[in-house]
Image (tube, rainbow, N blue to C red):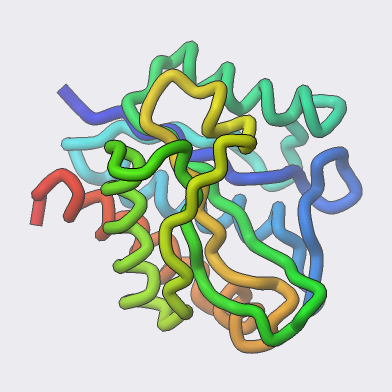
Length: 189
């Protein structure tokens, strides 16, 4: 039986509700859409997995507000039902020196935590971003309301020049890092 992974491409396209961050001429919703699509292709090409994405086209808008956008994503994963939930995001900070990749989970030493550790290690390995560690954030809606191990990956900072270049040019590598992390978590390699 295939392991069902729901990939939430965080945020909507530019100009829509819940559009996410923008920086360095890049839009979070576009990057997360592409990285999530690459990841779904990798997982669906592997018979051990079945993947679904929250957005099926780059223009698709989920929800009519930030709240309903998040609720729609969680509902899709819960109703499937997915075995794991991975939400993909890009970060932003007023300080352009801040950079790197981090993973948010609901609690330490959970299934999501250990999956997140493998994903983080592999993104850092394949893309060369800074390892900012695994962080607990119990306030994130997608981590609180999903019925399965869930994590939120902040790929890098749109506000940092080096990260922004990677987010623009290495989208496939980010997805590959996540995929390799998933394989390692399940002991498939």
